Length: 247
Image 1 (cartoon, rainbow, N blue to C red):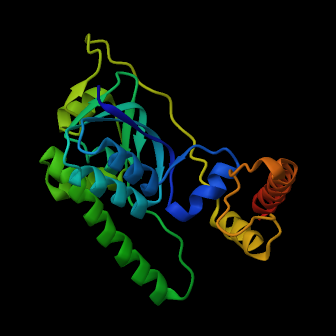
Image 2: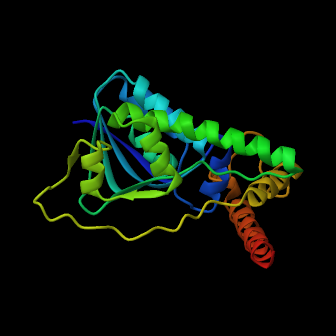
């Protein structure tokens, strides 16, 4: 029986994980996948994918981990493989897609500040990384780089049949000729100022976290303190979200 590895929720860096876990936001980090692959120890794995994407560098790291894995890997897109998650999906040996799922590919996005030179520089960086990301699709589909970059420019949503025709997947699950479409998704990545604020509070000790203790640790003698910390953190998040909405 192959070991199942979930790629679900936001794709995030390892050092964001404790914050997402604190607020019970589904997520996958490179550390999660690396740990699961070590436990699989070369045995067959089944990668279950349902993710709107997230951090592009974390997605690249997970893709590389899957490509380097010595055992046999099968992937199943059961909901959505969008953005960074679509790159991750390209890392398995054989990829299946549910008849009610989709793949979405688009250009890399970022934020920039500064004068015209900074924005011109950032545009070049983004174009270069689009080309790098397209390599994952190229290796899987055999399509030309130009075709893939054009699909990314146009934020392309691929139905199961389209994904199969273009070579993004190897097979449609339960294929009886009646292919259905999925609904669109709403990405809920935590804003970077929320991440930074939570880190600042942790450093200042306002969450009462001990050294090397994450918020989801549950020592028996500190349950009330932990619950108070979580309540405080959630109140802070609500305040931050209000500030964001008012900007």
